[in-house]
Length: 424
Image (tube, rainbow, N blue to C red; front, side, top):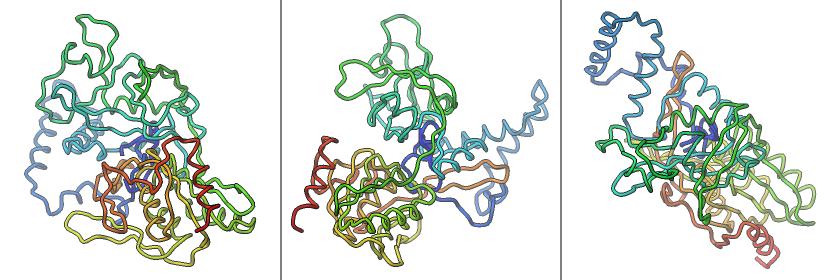
């Protein structure tokens, strides 16, 4: 899973920490340094805090065995508190998970090396979430094992994935109701072992472990099975080359730390090699930091790139300033694995540069995420707003459509080059 910190949008995970980074636009709350626990209660009705303290006192005073791990109690309570929001993209992060998130922001991912998100679904009236592969990172275990964007993970080793909404009033499923909801092997009386999102992420984050996955894949008549050796991978934010004497190519893998600076260097190099037009490839671009999105777009244009709409506040404009490095013609490539802040970057280049876009509809992750660090090294990550394009359009859940739809991946780049070779 791919997890990115401080981005504008997930769920996600890039296995597993990739998933925390996954696509979302994430930022850190810096209203001080770390956030003391006491500060979180300021200005709120304290009755829930009184209830929490009463329960904690009862546990410490009357539980049959002496409780020695206070951190476990606290983390469990906070985890369930955030989980009660029924928002799979708001979560509590342990110090280790926060560390992975920080590393992902710098382009180092652990575990599966894929962006995983929870997608709501309904089967025979039962609401649940599917664990969907949004994108895989170059050089990562997922891509090496043949895992593809759009795959649905149904089984991890001997556990079948099933995530129901928190505080769901649905009855726990029996084997008959599970048939069709998840692919079960044969029939029998026993309900198989079920695993939820948290356990799945723990399993898929273990560097060095071998994991067997069962996947549902569009167009495949039966589930796909594969074995993956999990491990760390470092991803460069930008790759570039010349496609011809006058056409340059830049692929943005993700809006990780330093992406804007790396893109600047790449564009200067391509310009010096004679590039007069450019293909900007945002396919399989896993999103990331809104600050890096602004810095990257600022290499091409100035002005308003989009907005963040937060509760009780007017829209916050995302504005690029400074002197653009590249002013030639541009075609943007996008697909269903263009996620979060990368979607906003594609839209910004289209609206500000009048760039043309080619490919397929983007993923549709238009959430703004904020990480609130806590003093012990843990954190909470919350959905705090919506991303809007420069025209004010929301794209969460719907994605952004290209100007020219080309669904075959091996034809998209050729189409972009043909457009740049044709008269403007």
